[in-house]
Image 1: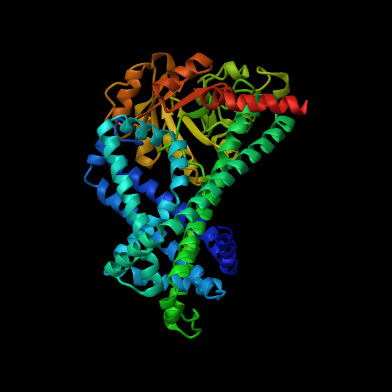
Image 2 (image 1 turned 30 degrees about the horizontal axis):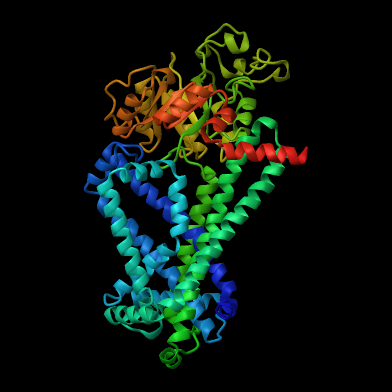
Length: 600
């Protein structure tokens, strides 16, 4: 084993810089782009079914839609092509390394592109599909981690696996696929290195694996144990270090929430690097083993890989690859700049936490200080109320009358914003907020852009001509349509929002019963007083693909009840406490207590 590790390290060293550079760039561009496209396609099918997201109750109807299968097949084909090309880059780099050749980055990419084109020929397509399957088998640890952390996917998995026949069939099918990929995995080497066509590559690959099974399998097992151990050790160390920093420097009431959020970020970053390391390790072992035991024929076929400077074909390849990477990079960058990588839609996520009227427990409601605290509290959403002034300005205000928050006994629609701006919306809450003004929607969006999602409640009132149109114009101007969702007690307003943008997420605010709105395309979710919600009512809404958000949930007992009955989000005056209750664990609490004991 020591000799194998030493020889493999030498193999890895030759082209590792360009391989790692490729992996980092390729994953950052194409994985993000692919995931966004896939989610949008799935959302499109869900919209056709009248659903807002996939859950246990509606997955059957989602799968019954005739358009679901072409879309899923397209998603799988794109995923296989993406994976197949990446495998070709790795195999090309390692093959050159075996022969002692150090490739330039562009040479590596162009050579892999040509090899991919060759493998996409009809006679080789089965081998290319095998390469794609091999890639995702290498990612099995990462995929299992992701499925476990995405709440709705985990719920669907648990529900389906509760059906014994389905569980048995699924395990059997997955086992057969994995077995087929493992037994035939060296067919990729025979096709890529020795130009063996489909059937012949499979035949020789299977023979190679059977002969060398005892010698090659321990290397794969060692690699698996290695990166798994490194992942958990690094994760534990980073969580402890970050927890120490949180305990030392963060406010006491933010400790638990910060550690939970930081833990998720650390997990995501580590999984990104583990996904790269695993496929590099496994593919490197495959190429190393192949050349260790089957070197002769390729020694005759191999010649130094170079890109001819005057080749028109190579220039076209470079232009195509550069254009795709450039477009993908620009798209991703523009999307992050526009929406801060935030999205009001929650296709696969868990319970979202919405901070009510900003952070109204700690600052004057619907003011910029309250919004700043909501952002600092790590809430998923901030809920704000909007109304329209006499001169058409959109402002943040819950009550129609200004008296409760400012002391001015007048309705908002009877005053111009220039007069409202003179009012004090902070003194009634606390002295330190004296002079706080009622902000405009534009000011609120500027503060929240790329920092937090918004649930904008459109309040009913008089003189509401062009009210919704004015709101949507501001959201469009700020490029924040993906960061905002809208709710209202007025069905008319929700219909107007959808008239402006059908992709905007909209919620109907009701006190108790949902009414006959389950099939209404203008409503994506219901916002309901938590005391009226039951398991049956939540299940009924979910069965029609509608989300359920509970308001206003502030105590431990009610938060846990909402979690048990499976609501999609809670609106609360205590977002930090809500995160501790909904996502906290005894392990996290024990960690914080132990760190406090060591530090103090």
